[in-house]
Image (cartoon, rainbow, N blue to C red; front, top):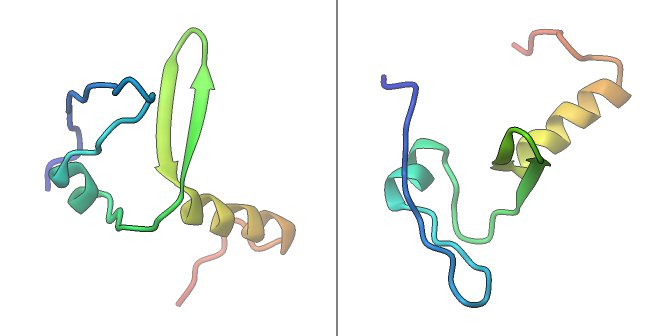
Amino acid sequence: MKEKFLWAVKVSDKGQICLPKEAREVFNINTGDSLILFGDVKRGIAIAKYSDYVEFAESIFNGTLGEKND
């Protein structure tokens, strides 16, 4: 499976972008999903699924970070 991708999007006059269908499929982003934006002035913007980071945060708070789930 391909691991690196590049897509171009345009920003609307309302500041909105449309995620390309292929990007939504690759990252399993569906209608109604919440996304989180990470910004770094030097490195740029990263977008991730909010639910992925909620699971990550819960594993930290529960002390289970790094444990394998069966």
